[in-house]
Length: 62
Image 1 (cartoon, rainbow, N blue to C red):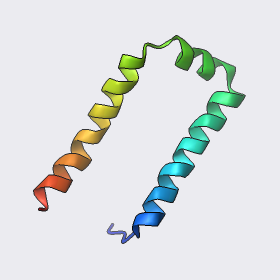
Image 2: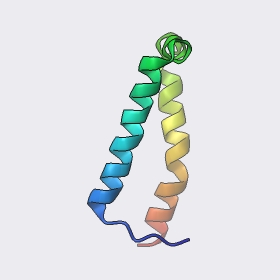
Image 3: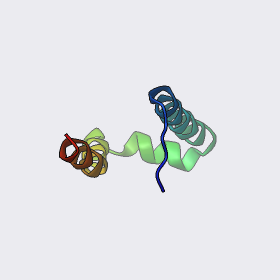
Image 4: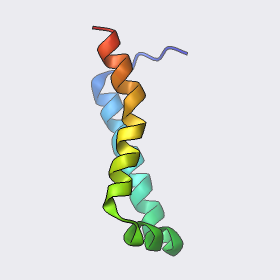
């Protein structure tokens, strides 16, 4: 699959993802408790792990 999204469309996808995450945290008390009781470092580690593949792809194409 090869999608040719414009930059603003990618931004809209990201904003939609954030909005859905906030919605889930707001309406699901168990998820809200998990997020509030988890150390922020785990979220940072997850973000770094999830960013590895896109960063490798980005730097290999240049």
